Length: 562
Image (cartoon, rainbow, N blue to C red; front, side):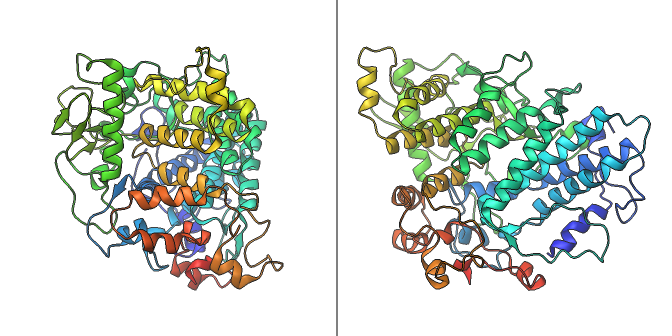
């Protein structure tokens, strides 16, 4: 799909209807004429519609987010061989594979660009500055979030920040560098916050979690700063959430038995931003059942990626649940315990002894289950929300940044890890009240602590499309991970060497550990094949879709896929 055609999504009339009380009424899409031009922007309601359109396109990205975030991460796999999904999970993609298509993310960007360009010029006596600035905040968030997903998956993509106006506007543009894209993301977040109109909450309950708030902006900034190795900045923005006294802030849910409430019914206080569905008001399903199989079923091969739980992930779940049972002594009265049994997964067979535990044919519960104890009871409708950020995520972002700052910060990182583990009904990682706590911490090393954070993230966010990026962050720890320009711009680097060996060469500190996490969890190709591919750091990223290359003569392919 041409980027020009993606931008023309701003002109589409879509069938979804969404005015201002229910989700169904609010997420009303675009005007019925063919183009959002200067003539369209007459009232605050016009702006509101395009802002809402951005969220609808964000919802449409969810299948892509799951594929990109989970299929390469080792916790889920697609059966069979040779499908598009298999090619992705085996790092064997070609530019013709449409699972690398990024069009919907550019549709989000197109909506945001239109609001940012045109909302300031709307002449409506009832369109007060605070409302206008609030809309701008949402558009900044949408654009920054979309680019954060693009840069994590492609490293270099076209950077478009102006609205599409007419067919005379050229959108044949080259890629921007990773550093340029990250700078734009940071600029958008700071611009939004500088308006002073980023909301802490909305009057309608679901919108507080389903529309961008200042909390969502803080979480996004902490996320991209951690990705960019800007540890002090990551901690700063994480603390805006974790150390605020605001009575209406998102807050960590400490009760183990209520962990599942984040997913059923959703919109929990721990949530910072989630993509929202409600079948009763919209008559729309999110089709998560096409991504995660039913209880007791191993889904057959599918082109678009049906996600079965891998044996590797199942063993980790069993290990954690056994540790929980030892720590707790027994299951709770309703058999909910920690974040595994009847929360992250349910199973039709559970065998536990003092030394081992086994589960068979598990299913991801969080998108199918209810608050009913009977694990065979599933939602009437497939309308589970998809959480992009929650407080536990921000806590572990901060913990990782603290670890990378060095030993003086490790105690604070361990405090956060302990909090996550305690909520999961696990024993603490280090007893910080013990007399020998300082010696225990002093005997730890950076990699050991990083892997503990990644382990906690893996079990905490199973199926939430985080796992691949966690592994990739570990692989990226390197002083030269982000050249200032694109590969084509870096004339001082021998291109063939850059192409065949990847950026950063052998300077990646934990590259081999990251490759080990990938190879030991993948069950559909050989270790030798994966190791051969992933030695080239460009292979960690997706190819640009072939149709994009053909339609944009300024667009260069990821060097690995040439």
